[in-house]
Image 1: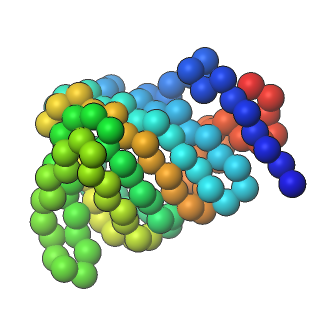
Image 2: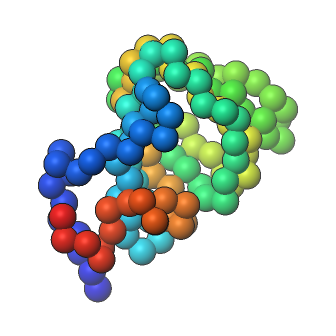
Amino acid sequence: MKSLFVKYDEAPWLEPVPGFKFKPIVIDRLGASIVELTKGVVTTPHEHDDEQVDILLKGKLNITVKDERGERVESVNAGMAFALEPHVLHGVEALEDSLIIEAWAPAERFRAVAITVDEDK
């Protein structure tokens, strides 16, 4: 069995596009991250192999989703959560500066860039 304790505040942010920052951490099959989005950031619609659960702690988002119910835009406010099964097409627009806690499984998508149990940070 493994455990991991991290000085998360000292971990570096990854910023794949300006205004979209995150700090992924991975243990075995589960990954999680804090995500910061700057007002006005729009992500390209995408899908992935993992399940995803997001809890919006601060801000407001519009999430474009295309699933078995069709394509639509859902508004998400602070205190709300959303979950996506694998291969659900989705994109995000930050209507305000936003802070999200995100978890996903399996964790393969971010393993190469995440803080993992193999590192002592």
